[in-house]
Length: 93
Image (cartoon, rainbow, N blue to C red; front, top):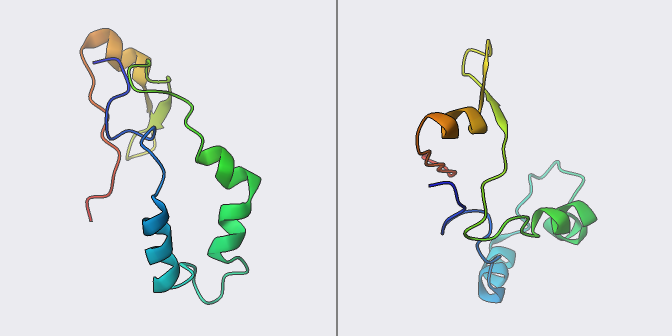
């Protein structure tokens, strides 16, 4: 599949309820951080990150990833030329 699918970064941002829960739990930053969650959320860089650059059904943008040993890189376009590619971003912790 060469398109962006559900579960990708184009998903809707947090709901208002989710933001309120996050606020009640704390400011979300370490005690020694010079920034608060409000500082980060108000920044232009954060707003840019929250703006979807692709939509569901768009071609995934090409990128390079370093190998775990750091000795080579893998390019998405090279993988797509060989076979279908599934990209999964998330935490497995």
